[in-house]
Length: 324
Image 1: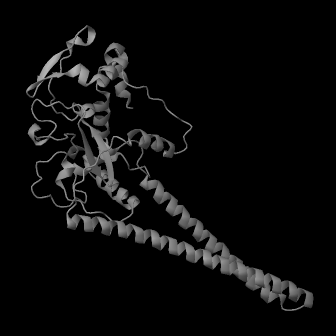
Image 2: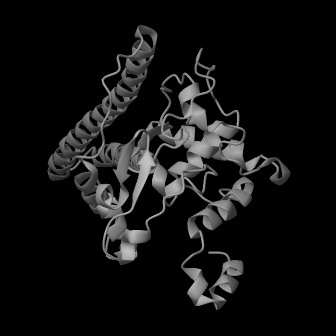
Image 3: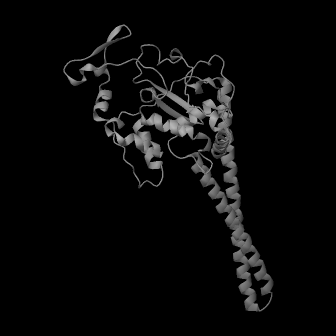
């Protein structure tokens, strides 16, 4: 966190009412052009940052989809073909493109100029609670919870008055053409506000993110709902072609590894054969020097092959880490 935010903690009574998420996002976006010059990988929880950068900068975007120029979120406007390249190369391209954007050209104005009516859940007098969107960026599907980011994005939601939270009875407001008992319909949200949210604990003993992701998947497994929309034939073909290209890359890696292992086995067998022959000649007293030279040459080739194998596995490990 930037030191300038420490000044906001002077009044602890007011600190809990500040929009800390919006402040941190604004600070990140102000540093966007120089965010990754000295880093080798993207760290932290950054799907919103990726989506914003993807929708605001011309980095490999495909053509606009016909008839969807007014759709929100902005990612829904683009027909994106699967990229057969590996994920680490894709991330390098994105970081390089962001690094070369001047500071004065980076403005944080999400959904500027958009109308509320273009969004089905932000139409006039419609509640935003329990309405979620699915955002797709760089092959990752992320759930956008509108009630958590609506003010950060600058949208206007209907004023919800709940004067009965501190006394008996219910507050009723009129939504659509019927009475809406807000406190009863959204009792879990009211309880969440009263409790002050959930406490976040840092688990320093985790060596990687796999254990965290397991819990994340288990917690949200029943909440993610995808529609049964049938993909257009051209888009389905592109998707299958992208998956086929990825499988071909993996197959080539496996073939190279199998070839290296077979070469190592042959070299080791040849070394053992020559060592046996050397011992036989030593017993007979001749031709030892020539065979020893052959053995040393084969051992050198064997060590080179082992080194190449280790380098290939290390590159593959780094590639998998970049994908995560």
